[in-house]
Image (cartoon, rainbow, N blue to C red):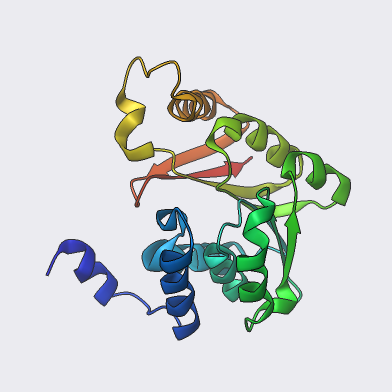
Length: 209
């Protein structure tokens, strides 16, 4: 048994619905690794349980796995607003969200969160950032502007397969360059408290003070 297998054997199990979604993601989608998966999904649910947000923003829905995990933890009356910029993703993802037990807690948008979120007029208590890594700084500033004092931003993929250790990424590798810039910005930002968890591809937990 590997350490990863040991961990998964000693945490809450994912539902059969999530298992089916994860399988379908791997069969039908091009980049299945982008789905949060069992461990990260249980952690996202736990974060929601701890924070008790009324309004959650997710930037980057992909197959809907992380959205369902966060919706699972939402208190009564809470709502998750999840944005996917790739309109080709809608035919796969929307049915999984709308046929789930948490459909009434999820609003699914196709479009650019940078443009659409400011139009909603909503103050969020939790933001999960998992969109285009090249736009992480723009997402961060937008999210912070619409985040309640004491609210949290959780940014995914902030260790980027270890590429953040590269001192001089290739000029064409904009994802690594922008992730490094984002990490440097957050590290120096006195508006927030922050910690990076080495879970999967790196999760940065950011607390607005």
